[in-house]
Length: 475
Image (cartoon, rainbow, N blue to C red; front, side, top):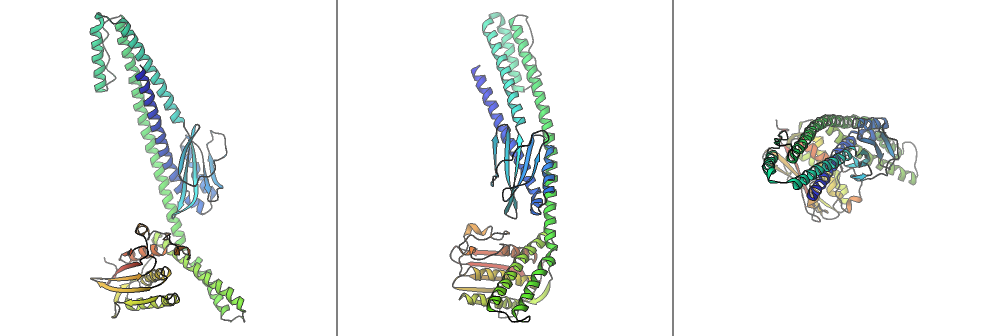
């Protein structure tokens, strides 16, 4: 009897742990989908859309409240189930976590956009399922233990030779049920004495177990149906979130003119003023206007990177394939970078372009990729030299930029071409940037039918290279 009690407690505790783990997993998946779905609302400061997203949680009756925190820790949007009294939301947790509080589960999920955290989603759920399961298991365990104890007492008290055979038959029936898991089997009642009572009690226990087993099967079937329905709802929410993300990329891609035109005007008018066309300027005025012009150029470059990556993601980037002289394009890009290299005392050389190199591709995009690689080489090289090498490999050209700069550790190279990724070195903090350059280069090279690669060792320089089909994009 003590063993049954211990086993029942252990089984109930194990099942309680399993249910808690299942609740954490299911709620975490739901919170992740809400976080992805609400990215657009937080980015565009649309609290109404955020509240609508949270209000969709009302289909889950066990969820009592939810909130979306902005990056500064303020509550951007919230939801409270109609069946519970409003209460203050917990302090913001900036990391992904879950915790069990009295009578509820709390889950925090960071909201990420392009590798950057922009907010946090918090959802609180009642532990109704857990408490009901715990109560049912305790009742079942107590009933079974009491029934088994009562039967054992009667058998030990009334055991005589006359009941040996019925006991054997009862044991045989019990073994059959244990082997076949068929709780519809019943033991035959041969006498009306204590042995008969035992058999009847055994059959009643089987009836109870059979009813509970049937109820459990029906409950599992209903649960599977609810999970299936919930999965479909979450899939629909995921698709809506993906659609919103595509709309974001489409919006940014179509804003190129509206964003670039004001900056170009600032740069143009600043240049006119620096030329003295509107009147003489003092040295301090020239200094300040040069700062404005430099900052505008830098901002235009950053916006161009963001718009390029958005166009690529939105599928709006088009390439103009036409024949051109690759040698002239390489020399043009090298000459534009040479003043920056000479200013740092770096030797910039070109190899392998003694002859005309005919190529069919998008000349502007090819020059953009090479300019980005050369600019990075100058940026991260303090002394030594930078070499640009062009070689023909079958029906492709290979263009290589090798430097003697700081180099890149092997474990950092896998994420090098990811958007907004910047190598964590001392030099990286000296320069501003979006971390989009190499990501754009890779996407452009792939669109042009080529490939890009890197070889580097920490402190031993880096070698970046990309290939281009000579005759344009292969069909």
